[in-house]
Image 1 (cartoon, one colour):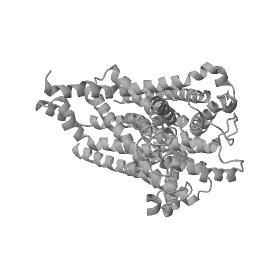
Image 2 (cartoon, chains in turn brown, orange; image 1 turned 90 degrees about the horizontal axis):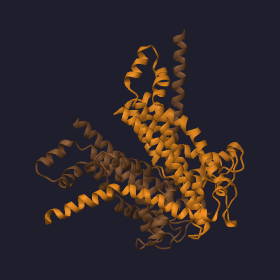
Image 3 (cartoon, rainbow over the protein chains, first blue to last red; image 1 turned 30 degrees about the vertical axis):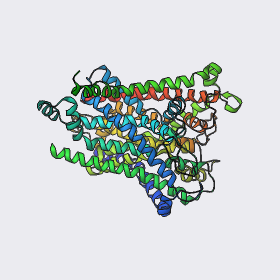
Image 4 (cartoon, chains in turn red, orange; image 1 turned 90 degrees about the vertical axis):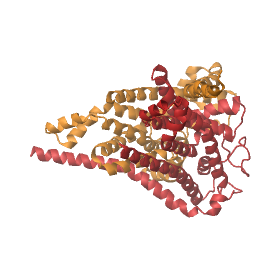
Length: 285
Length: 292
């Protein structure tokens, strides 16, 4: 009898946990489905590749272009620095007090709210360095924001390279620098690439850091240099859902779909590459 | 100096080393800049009046930030109430119940949830969730603390659930086996042995999630309603620190009182999240050391 109530209690417990878990996972899929169903109908060639003369209707090439350019400039700035920083942590730094302090700083930087990065970018890049509200200022701000992610993932990728490879290279007479660039870095490329793609997705979706550093509400023409402001997909979505009236629901869902497709597509790619790597590592072990 | 080794040496000794400590430099710069731009506000305005009065009317030079600080904590608190049980159940399900293949796909789903841009959550809040709550509860406006907290909860779940799942995984197998050997069934073992043993990691995960939620900007700005008031009504519109900075910084004149006030708010927000993150990362580090 006691055994029976124990089992019933457990069963109820399992069902309860199952329901709660399902109610976090199902909405995710529901949201994606909804945005796809409502948005995909709006997406055609003109929507993607035409610059519109108004905020309310027409193609969204200007914000798409802006997001791509801003993301590219951000990556040009952040990726080399991030990888070098990871190389320092993994290959050069002694695991002493400084190392742990840097580790702690990276974790804390990753937790700084994005709007604070926006303030920082406004203060240092836009005003102090006098770059002005521009793609460059926005990219520098985003670069700082994304640095912790790139460093962390690259560091983990570098650490997965077995020490035997390092020792073999050094034993063959290569210097430490040659070992890093000809042996370790190539061996950890897929892992680093995963990190870069994840970072790209994050930058493409962020809004708060570029509010006062790069974003333009509406521009009749595309930016021509990195010193120009730019329209951005994420900011455009914010603007048409809060500040512009008379935008059709279809248009809004279309913009959302493009943004989600871009960000989640990149994430999916990163997850795919990562699963390939772990399979390969599994095969090695 | 040997010409052949000059450039490599320069590269190793300066560029790589500099990149390594750059993060510390950035952290310092962030602190310094928030202080340089924020502290001038305190020369013109009483700090206690700033923190403890509740009139936020920048146009008539009234900067009582209490409703904003309250708003941030209130929305975050509501979000945590919703997110914690859901995250724990998800973590338990992934770690203790699901089959390996289901586990992988659930983890990927959480990752997808984590990567949805916050502006998209805001958009969904305005277009779907707000109107839904408005008619479902018969309230004045769907853009309120509850709606914002509901969305924030979903944004915090991936963080809390993944840290909790990791700490459940790091509970030694021997503990579970001991419990099973003593006659407890799997469910009892999970709830009474594994879950308590993972407690500190779960707390760290919750704190990390709370840190994320309190710093979240776009969703709250779009959905929370934006009125600077102190009210314990969950369906009342509120205004947070982040929302205030984001919506007002675009309109201020650089260098005036309002501009400095917003940087001061940023500095306060920075201190709050720094504290939360430092404590939670110290807990997580300790768990990893015990495990390793």
